[in-house]
Length: 310
Ligand code: FEC
Image (cartoon, rainbow, N blue to C red; front, side, top):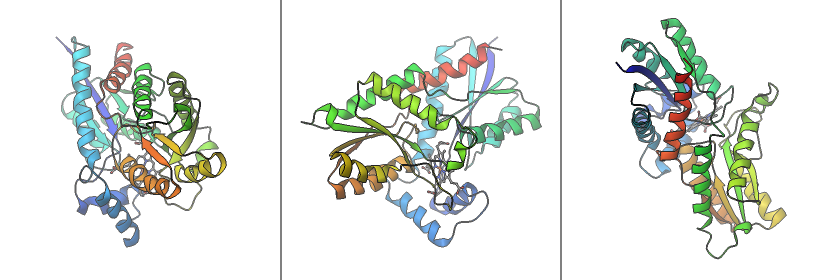
């Protein structure tokens, strides 16, 4: 008979409707409700993005389905069943673990839809899943990161090459490629967190594969809290490259994100675009991975590698 394996697929989560934004935001803020001003600001950003409200919900659903199909197609001797576990929305990480146990899953693997490990991001998902699994007596192993998987690098490189063609009439090397990821509070540096280095490794590898020399790394979407966050921020970079290097063409490649959501559709496509327009910069962004077959194969490979070791 086929070996049945539960796969906990963890992702950020998004509200399902406007009336859930407050609860979602309160969860992100670890139980502290936002002020009405903060709530309005976030609601306005959701209302401004294209693709309807809360596209992350549907994008995660599609990714999880495509990933499950990929796993089962790649490994006929096994029966993989994927369970969603979201960080800040229902079904929460703990709900996913609980559902596996209810369904009689005894072998489980967990993975986050984010390629780079940080104690504050991926580490947080894993801790919550592990705690729930321990409570329920489920054995589960986790993929920590997959930021240098050759298929992921190929998918990102294809996107950089595609996007560079959108700068018609501009020599490739006149386009500054900025690889970005979600910023985190600077305090992660004190604990030797691997996040910044893993991001640089991905950026370097993609730049090498695409023969791009004119590139840099930047952060985006820093939280609105009182503490310092990792920089430079993409908005500051846009100002700096015009002033210091007379750059007129910028391609942003958000390597820290794997699908279309607020941080890409608002922070880059609306907010950064506005700054670029004001500065006279032609700004393009690489397409998100979403259900790209190479990304699905990356996930399938790294999850299966953990199953084989059993
Ligand atoms: O489309 C959507 O509905 C969700 C978009 C979204 C993604 C995302 C990914 C990451 N975050 C990470 C860290 C933090 C930290 C804080 C924080 C705050 C927010 C807020 C919103 C939000 N994040 Fe997020 N994040 C997304 C959305 N994030 C909305 C709250 C308002 C704001 O600050 O803009 C600060 C929490 C605090 O106050 O203490 C820290 C990291 C990722 C990438 C990895 C991952 O996907 O898990 C890291 C998508």
